[in-house]
Every structure is written in structure tokens, then in C-alpha cells.
Length: 321
Image (cartoon, rainbow, N blue to C red; front, top):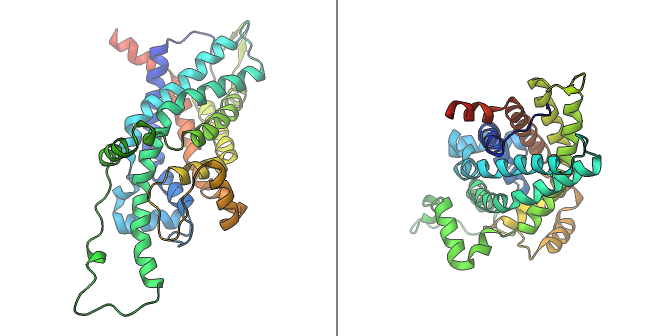
């Protein structure tokens, strides 16, 4: 990007718009990632495509967007904080227009830390809504597999014909605030921090260096990389960072899931969760949803960086003036 200074309001608008566009495009894959990561005993889904196909078949097309309202509402402040904070830290740590690698890593660390304030409650609510369909689909599988007497002809099993009501973001929030206070919405904050800080420390320096390859220097002025180059750089950096922190994302998802299926573990913390997953499911379980996560993060951050470097915020502010 050129050396011109971008105002904070423009950075916030860029981050918000980028988040809205990106989440809308990739949310169904994110839903598949959450459901695959939460599978422990009964295997309802055999992969991402199988998960999406079964979701559409049983819940309709919009079933793939369960929890999207929460994400779209909170992704604007989340992405705005993340992108703007990274940019501010980079400017503060730069000397004479040069930022060393340690400064890039530190700026990414600061950005990841700042965003957790919004990310934790957003992910907490989103995961409950996304996973509700998996739990509902798991019940018939368990009923078919479980041995037992034939169902009574006199008293038919009404529980199967009257499934529990679908959870809502407002209902979950109200229940958590009543029973656990504000801390209930921040369950798994430590795991979220452990995931997002390393992600940002990998992503932002990698993106900056990949994006710089598309910039041309004319005299003392460095031109902005073309749109397609920023998009590809964002996709590549996002994929690498996403796969690298997938084990931490699995732990975070398990800790933040409140409703468990039959025979599924509950966890007392990060260490307990790590031990139980390793003992019961083996090392491969820590990479559950890695492909989905890469397919979510790559276009999400590609779109984000494309919008950010196109300067949508500057154009909006210009129209308002």
C-alpha cells in the first residue's frame, strides 16, 4: 500500500464492509467446520460436502446459515478492530517507513489480542446455533443404533415427533447472563486468545510480505499492489495461518459448545480438553475441520484485504462529506 495515512474511521469502515461481504460468502463452510469439529462418538457427517448436503436436506438451504445473524452483527466490530488495530500498531512500530519482522509479528499479536473482546461472545453464540442441527441429526442415528425393546403400539414415542425448539441467540444470551453472568458469554476466552494471537502473528506479517511482492517502487514512492494481488496474498496468508492454528480452534470449539450429544465429553479447561481429545480420539482429532477452516479463512481474508486496500472507507467518507 502507498505511504499515505488512512484515517481511523476509514479503517473501521473498510474492516466492517470486508467482514460482512466475507462472512456472507463463506458461512456455510464455517457451519460445516463447527459440526465436524464437535463430532466425537456418533459420526453424523463423513466430511464437509456430506455435512452440507445433509444440512440442506434436513434443514433447508437457510439451515446452512444458522448463526449467521449473530456473525453478521458482530463481525463488523470484530474485523474493524482487527484490521484497524494491526494497521495502527504497524504505524507505531515503523521507523522511517520501515517495519522489521519482529514489529510485524508484534503488531499482529496486538491485533489478535484486541479482537478477542468481540470474538469470544460472537463465537460462543454462533457455535451453539451452528451445532443445534448436528445434535438434532444425531438423535435418530442413536435411536437406530441402540438395542432395546420394540416401540410400544399403545404409547407411541412422541419425543421423536416433537423435537426440541431451535435455540435463538437472544434466548442463549439471556440464559447465560441469568445463570453465569457476563463470564458465561466469555467462556473459552483463553482458548480464543490462544487461537487468535498466533493466527494474527502468522497472518499479518505473511500477508504484508506477500502483498509487497506486487508493489512497484517509482522513485521514493511505493505504489499500491493491484487488487488481484492483494486478494491472492490474503487467501494464501489466511490458508497458512488457518491450518497452523486448527488444533487450537478445535479446543476452543469444544470448550464453547454447551450442549453435548450422548456419550460426548465435557471439559474443565484447555489442558483437560487437550488430554481427553488425545486419549479418546488421537492426534488426528486436532485437525478436524482443517480443510473447511482453510476454505473459510482464505476467501474471507482475501475479500477483506481486497476491500481494505481498495479504500472503500475513504470513498464512503468522501461521499458523506
